[in-house]
Structures are given as structure tokens and as C-alpha cells.
Length: 159
Image (cartoon, rainbow, N blue to C red):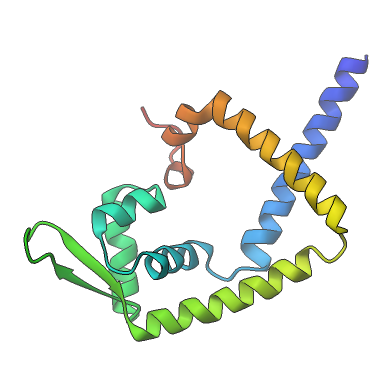
């Protein structure tokens, strides 16, 4: 009986994690995918489309779609690499940099607001527990997680 109660509690915790993820990505951050792409480009300076796809952990074809949209919004420029015309260099425009900085300020404010109810000690405990879980999950599901990353969410696991 205790084992079933423990399973029920673990299930409740997983559902709570799902609810927290919803708050983080849908209520506090307007465009999490685009914002993450902007942050990667902002931190990297000029990078190739291949490196961008690797850093985003997405397929090159998905990266191309994301970058095309960002380019049409005036957030990035794409240009052929001088040495190898097959490589495409991506650079944030001034507008892209400005939006990234604005998003970063909004995210910092959201993070502060989201963590108001926790003491420093509680925050440390939460961080320790979350790192413990992630470390275990990386060991257990590392390869599987790579096969079923965010870009495969709708299609399921691909091998």
C-alpha cells in the first residue's frame, strides 16, 4: 500500500512540474522559442546556420524555417560565408539586439516575480533537488531525450 501511495505522490509531483512548465513558458514568456534563438545569437555573435541548429538542438531544416521567419521580421541577416558558400552566417540586426535586450529585462523581472515566495534557503534546496532529478534523468533518458527533443514533440520519438 505504501508503494502505491508513493507512486501517487510521484505522479502528483510530475503533474505539478507540468503546471510549472506551463506557467514558465506560456504565461511569463511571450515567445520562448524565438526568445531562446535570439539569446543564442546574441551570445554567439555571428555563427553559421549549422552551429545555430546544434545549439538549438533542432534539425537544420527546422533551423532554416526559424531563421527565415526571423529574417522576414528584420531580426537577423543571413549571408554566405566568404570561404565556403555552402555555409550561411547568421547575425542579429540592431533591431534583433534591441529586442533581445528588452526580452532579457522582461525575463529577469518575471524570474524575480516567480520566485518571490521562496527564501534563499528554499531556493537552494529546490535547485539542489532539481539538479539531482535532471542528472538522474540525463543518465536514464539521455539518448532517448536526444531522439525525442522539443522538435519531435508532435511526431513522437524518431529513430
